[in-house]
Amino acid sequence: MFELNAVGNSSKAELYRELAAALTGLLGEESDAVANAANTAALLFMTLPDLNWAGFYFLHDSKELVLGPFQGKPACVRIAVGRGVCGTAVARGHSVLVQDVHEFPGHIACDAASQSELVVPVVANGRIIGVIDLDSPIAARFDLDDQAGIEQLAAIYAAASAWPA
Image (cartoon, rainbow, N blue to C red; front, side, top):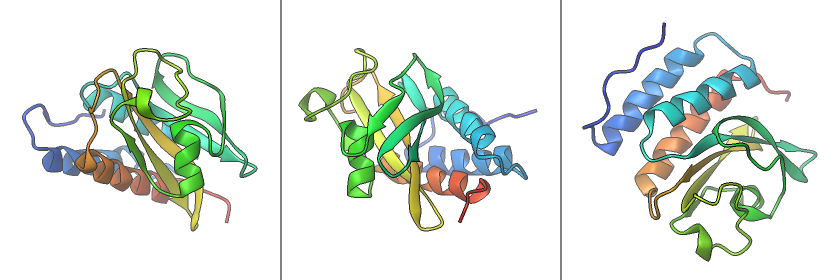
């Protein structure tokens, strides 16, 4: 059975340390990338406050991202690299933190309630294989502490999951 200590009054640093330990334990000996993505998305959605979407998009043929496991409302299935926040993160090769999605040129509004977004590339074997995407109905929900924490969780996910070389 999975259980996480209370994180409600924790600092962000403590929260992400706790989440890193929880994710490491949750993924355990499992190496299936889809199963691990499903559990990672569920953990993020369950524990991080003020989210309306948490999930993965996986890179296919280096041209487009395809929807992976997620928690939240139904989402866009395919996103071209360079388009929207997710595609921009892949094209730039680094995380993209958006305080107000209405000010991001080309933002893709899968859920009209989303006001801010954080997208973190998932890197395995030295290449981007996808992204973790977090949306919030609150403007400026994410900051650099969230970005660093999710980058750490993305690395834990990538290390636990089997990827072709």
